[in-house]
Length: 484
Image (tube, rainbow, N blue to C red):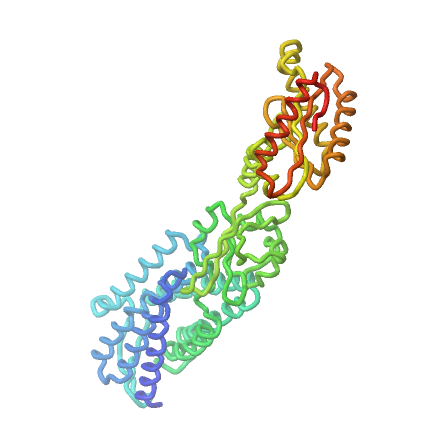
């Protein structure tokens, strides 16, 4: 076996891993990437240090390179645990106490490796073996070495467990991403366990060489599936605490994440998994969330959607806000601005707007309740309001297809579009007949003035003035009559 060839392989592997560090730094806002980069950097120290250890010919020089290796190796347990913890967002087991304990053991390991000649707690003996055909260190493990191995196995077991749980909860292309990650870490884990159990080449640590296999696996996952863009791009606490529904979609239309509010707004999400198609959301399948109109009526509720494109992460975020109450309040305000609350008819301003918007010939009618002040003085304002309300209903029933309003006080106005003066007169007489039968508490009559209106022959206001003059004429003639 050629030690130079082995060293070259380790240097090549280190160069590939270095590319992952650069790639990860460009996506440092993604959960887990910070520890991913540190873990890759630790592997570079291990690989480069071991490459030069294999090229060395004395125990002293070899041990110097071991110290370089352990700048990374010492912190494998901590970095593996932290990467998996952040990547999967599992923090209930790997809490602060557990993480701090692992880090403390790793720091002690580094110190003991650098001071091993004074206590031999990490390596009980150090010698050089020439049996492979080149000089290699023959190291006997001390008691602290066993402790470090225990914490390494503990971290690996934790990582595999949480990744398997993540794998179970995902589907589609995201399942492939987690599979490639598991495949990438499998090779180092297997070779590391073989080395620790003494089942590999004597005194030759094969673990750094497995990084080359890991590099190929991660490269495929990285550039084919963009492995680092796996989790929701916002931290879980913020993600779940906001009151709006948040849906995160990748460039392939797959769900990257959604918060609990989303499941309240769109119940079908409760049955879906990360990695499934966005189009499977039952409540949204008939709605284009990228349309110009951001407001959508979904299952009787009104939602406002805001779309955010994040090119750095190649995802699209939809933020949905339930605006049902505010929209209903807005409609209520619109009603109050256009409808007379007592009679249910349009108010005068909106009546004028509607007539002008309609743009049609027709007949204007202005109606005034006779001696209405007497009703208020005799029966009280409450009874007067009831009379106005009942008369408003009567107008709506008599002229359902025409525009009507409370013109002011006890006066009402009606515009009968595309209707001749004779037909309009008959309709007002029908109103008089209904009025004589409909109001029982007190006798109420009305006077009315009518005039024709033709587009281009004058304004709406001028036509209403003429109708008002006819109304005045009806009153002068004794009331309870129609003048035209």
